[in-house]
Every structure is written in structure tokens, then in C-alpha cells.
Amino acid sequence: MTSVPVLTTNLTTRLERAQHTAAEAGMDALLITPGPGLRYLTGFDARYSERLTCLVLPAHGDPVLVVPALETAVAQASPLGDLGIQIADWTETEDPLSLVSTLVPEVRTVGLDDQMRAITVLGLRETMPEVAQRPAGPVLAELQVRKDPAEIDALRVAGQAIDEVHAQVPQLLCAGRTEAEVGGDISAAILAAGHVSVDFVIVAAGPNGASPHHDLSDRVIQPGDVVVVDIGGTTPAGYCSDSTRTYAVGEPDSEYLRHYQTLQEAQQAAFDHARPGVTAESVDTVARDMLTEAGLGEYFIHRTGHGIGLSTHEEPYLVSGNTAVLEPGMAFSIEPGFYVPGRYGARIEDIVVATDDGAERLNHCPRELIVVDV
Image (cartoon, rainbow, N blue to C red; front, side, top):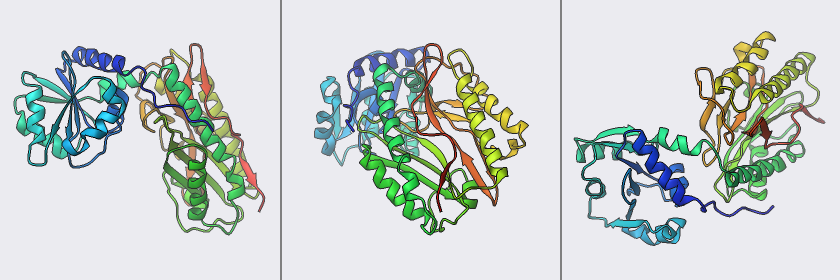
């Protein structure tokens, strides 16, 4: 498949919006360390290590990147180098936290990257004892939660790539193979489909399917097992895929088929409900009420969905208590499931993006239970 270029066309606008949003939130500066926030704002996929890299983004003024001197060339060669951002590098014998403090000499409140190392947070607190620290996450989430057309296209590419992998799973699942063996083949298929990394592979057969975040094990797949397969990776553009389908090795019993039919209907109803103007929690309620009415409510033990973009999990979260209103451009999973301890599980997950008047699925492989011949 054809990869999309790294999305760097609107980085200047993103930086300006981040400054404006930070100022509105009462923050004098944002301090952004390696992770999705730094990639979103600058296009720089910085190395995450004990050596501090930090974007200092004042609410008013020019941004500066603090970076170890041995990584200056890497920073300059990244999309950040074309933005004209000043680079302040530090050597092995210098204190980068003191350098950061000199770049924000008169601030009263800073927003710290949600993924900043605790030792850095505490070091900044000691270096700038009069400065209040707040999470930068709400500021960045406000920017990232609505995807622009290029980002949505990148998520479509990611959805197509992971669909290609799910299409191969029935040929990989068979009685006598272990979850780990199947998972190894799926990992190779994720890369072959155009991802640059494998973020996770869950192959949960039989009773293991009752654990939503089961990984891989040496359990041998048995005739009659149902198998939950949840997989995802990152594409060349930096955007993530995430999709779950449930398979059966041989025909399952009538009770399971009845429960699965309810799950499929609940997932469809949640998708039909998801549109601009409804709350995030209401999508969860639609799916949860249907499963509860069918006697499966106690077995639906997680939220109905999560946002997705440069991270697999981000805002908006489709969960009770989240009254945020969905807006066009928001991208999120819809993934109800049920998990009966000691017996089996099931989940159906699609990535969905809110449109002007509804929602678009970005995953298109079959949502029916896929029965594999023994």
C-alpha cells in the first residue's frame, strides 16, 4: 500500500493555537517533552531518554527547543528544523533544567507534558519553586481532539491497513497452534500491510478471551474456542490503527451465538447514535443498555470507546460521566464487548470519525462472528 507523508503542513498554525489556548487556560508557558504532543506540534519524533529534550513554548513569545547537544543534528534534520525554532542545546556537564528556567524567567504557571518523567517534574519544581505546575494535557487535547482532513485521511489509511491484516487472520487461526504463534504471524502481517511499528497484538482464545487486555500465551487453540483478536500499529504518517474482531474455531454453541448477535446489534446502535451534538457518554449508554437488557451488562467491564490519532488512546473517551459533546473531526473507537470469566469473551471494535451530520467507519472488515473450519 502507499504510505502518506508525515503531516507537517500546519505545524506553525498548531504552535500558534497551542500558545493561544495555553494563554486562555491561564498558563504562561508549555513545557513539552518527547511523545505525541511534541510530534503534533513540531513533527519531531524525539528520542525519549534520561537526557532532557523539551519544547519551551511561551504563551507569548518564540518557542525554543532544549535538546542534548549530541542530538542537535537530529532535531535540525526533522520537520522542526524548517519551522525556524531556536535550538538551545546542552552538553553532558550542564544542567538542562536550569537552562529551561532561564528561558521562562517571569512565568507564574507552566503546563507540563502529561508524559513528562516524574524526576523531571520534581527537578523543575526545585529549580523554579515559585512557579505553579499544571498538566498541559487539557491544552493539547483541545487541539488534537478535532482532526483536520489530512489527519482523517491518515486514519483512513491506518484503518485500511489493519483491515488487510484481519482479512488474513482466518488463515492463521487453527486448532493446535498457540496464541503466540498466531500473534507472531499477525505482527509480521501488520508490518507487511504498511505500518512502521506493531503497537499491540492480543490473541485471546477460549477462557483467555474473558480478559480484555490479555496479550499472548503458549495456550494451544482448541476446537470450539472463540478467539478475540485486537491489533494495532503506527503508520508512516504517525497515526495509529486499532481494530478488534472475534473469531470461532468451529461452530460455537447457541448461547454464545445469541450473545454475539446482541453485541453486534449494540455496536451498530452505538455507531448509529454517534454524531455531532450527542455526548460521549451517551454513546456508551446506548451500547451498555442493550447489553444489560440481554443480561450481559455485568460482563461489559470497560468503556465503549476512546479517541485515537498520534496515540492509540486519547480524547474523547466514550464513558459514563464524560459529558463532552461530539464534534465533526473527532475520531474514536466504538468497541463494546462481554467477558464471562472462565468461559469466553467477545469484542467488536471499529474506528469512527464524526462527520458534519453523522459518522464514518474507518474499518470495513466483517463484523459478524467469523467461523474458521476446524
